[in-house]
Length: 566
Figure (spheres, rainbow, N blue to C red):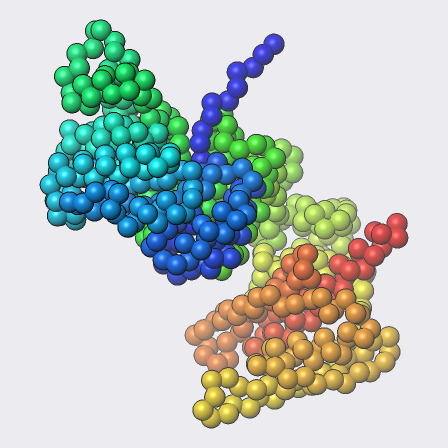
């Protein structure tokens, strides 16, 4: 028995061009190269690298990729049509495009007559000539062309006849793709579907003209030209879709276009882009592949999606969206006790796909809303088997609820919860004991930072150690002093680092007497973990979280050593 292959859908990533137009996002040449290579590994066929000539960074980016090309992806240069009242051969922008050395070029042109007359301040006829002349010139230089019809949907709704003429100009001059752009992000899915169908219907008519079907009356200029040009051998371009998220519809609109016949989807990783962003490929790819049966990337590449999403967010220095569909840390997190019980019996009850299909994982969230099932399930994820019939499980649950009523939060501080479980079970290993600490800060007038000195006294195996260290703040100094005191006993501490520090005021109405919750994220180069501290004294809360961060790191190391010996 044979099975029909999945229909092919072409992905086009514009993170490195459209995505970088997001407010607050900036990348270096090295950042762009790292992202491009990661997208190449993910299996994206087309990667838009930027606008050569628009800035020195993009010029160097394309030059470096000429020296060290990508493995499988086509790197694409981006540019506009030539300016009014000149020839494409004399357009400096296009010379920079050719110098980029890419096989594929994306050219955008105006579809909306309002933009032609108001933005470009030229005639509708000249705009058609600009599209035609630009594409023909690039084709004559051996380039393959993707034509982005900017503001296509607004233009079509305002003046459909002229909008279609702009596509005809791109077809006649040799574009291989026609990408319909919802540049303002204002269109709704039902409009996208209808307009894409209209375009496909028009292209079908043009295709019949090109094939010289006798029953087709070639009344349009485009048909008359194509019937004589290349003697009917011109291939009609395929349709692509490029959507923006101003109406929270970018992903839905892209899917609607595909269902209506589009063969290419343009978008960005994590939906980065100007204003409200672009269509999010991290949502589009699994929806199209897992739910609609399209072939976008391989199954193995799909399992890299979560990692790729987080990699890009790290490189561009933006916090990952923890609640993002498919790839967010909370995408498969379960907090309510009833939900956890159901998922434990059958994941389909509250999970629309298997998290592992996109490289994510199920998380059981622990909080004051947790039931015993949450505690049991969470313990299993850390290799701790609890017996629900024994008192320890309920003691852990009660201790959890008591601490959260005091302001602790274990949803984001799972390492602290693991230590809590070990303590309740009588198996919490005491690597060291804090005997006391002091922190002294000097605020020097005229300087932007303050100096801090921390002194700590710790005991390891009955031996007292007194150490001091400086830092650019009290928490940094305290962390440095603790590491200095312990590293001779536990050399692995040298690999630990404090990667994030968050402070939350819990009851601000009490002023300076308010409770403070501190979350500290630590790492060892391979893993990251978060611990929590709560106190009316911010230094004490920080101390609690920092100390537990070191303790949990040592616990991970001892467990790894035990596993190797076993």
